[in-house]
Amino acid sequence: MIELRPFNSLGSANHGWLDAHHHFSFASYHDPKRVNWGALRVWNDDTIEAGTGFPTHPHEDMEIITYVRKGAITHRDSMGNEGRTEAGDVQVMSAGTGVKHSEYNREDEDTTLFQIWIIPDERGGEPSWGAAKFPKDDRSGHFVPLASGDASDNGALPIRANAHVLGATVKAGESVTYQASADRHLYLVPATGKIEVGGVEAQARDGVAITQLDSITITALEDSELVLVDAA
Picture (cartoon, rainbow, N blue to C red):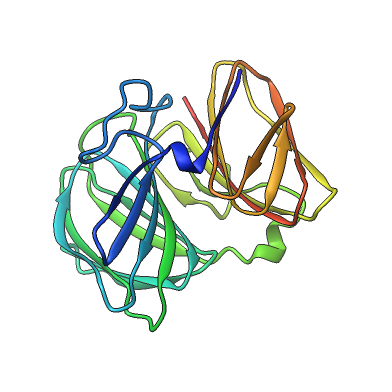
């Protein structure tokens, strides 16, 4: 099954400083058909105005992955962590028993990012935060694990969930294949470009929900930057 979820069909909320689009039910947006996709609970497509951001607020029992598309985001939390994550790079916060954090765009341009929430396998645990660089050239023509619950995914940021967050860049006319399992829930978003998967075309920032397939082949109709979640 492959279901296209066009960008213009997503939930949205424009707060002036924040222009948010929700692939799944979030805050005041609720769609009973789009509450989660397996363990994938949230995929927000956010544009954060320069000099603004999210003030300190709490989270618990959620794996929160931030993929920065343009600009940078600066994180600070109650564990004493502080870091700046730039475009193409990733940060992960395992909220565990509870953590408070803030996220600010301290740049002189808008920051755009995907924020992805995955339900952990178990509640509780010590909260943690980490970030890593993932050069786009290193994922040209193939998927690279960015965050993963599988310790064998070398270089990926660890999460406490039976899930993988992956990234790839694909040049126009080229294809990339991902081996999955029919019982998994895949969710694919082209951050940029235009793609075709299983006869379905998707534009930049569209969502593609996929299940009951053992593999998918994605063909880039334009140079494309891909983000994929594979979750239980």
